[in-house]
Image (cartoon, rainbow, N blue to C red):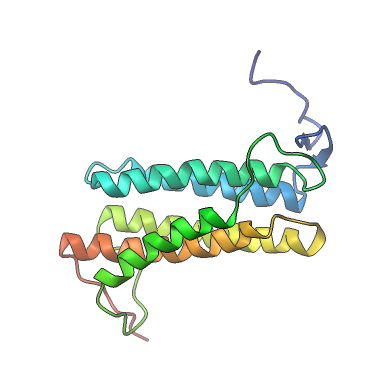
Length: 180
């Protein structure tokens, strides 16, 4: 079977269950932003200097993000072929956040995103994650969405911020405080 189906040439795409939506529908935009997040996390995970434990976490997050995209592509009125995002997924990210946060010096000011190349890629993941979160919230105003998805995106944004800080700290790269 070819990747080229031509079924989307008219500006629509199909959801699980057969419904077709415009490619600029809020549901399509939301899972498109989630897909972009997955690609950006993949860039960070592909960094040559990444510690194995961080690569493992980012790969696990990519699998979770893929699940989230499938969840968004399957309206709640349809039975999903896969387990939907749940509270246990959120708890796992919260555990990772707690472990990182306990090792970092308290943040006393806003900091510039950047530092090492890995930290910069993780900061980019954070900003794409926040955009995906906004898209999901916009969709949620119009349609029912799994309530764990915006919660998970919010936690992932926090995780990425802390992970970028940790990555810089581990590399001995100082944080640059914002000057106004």
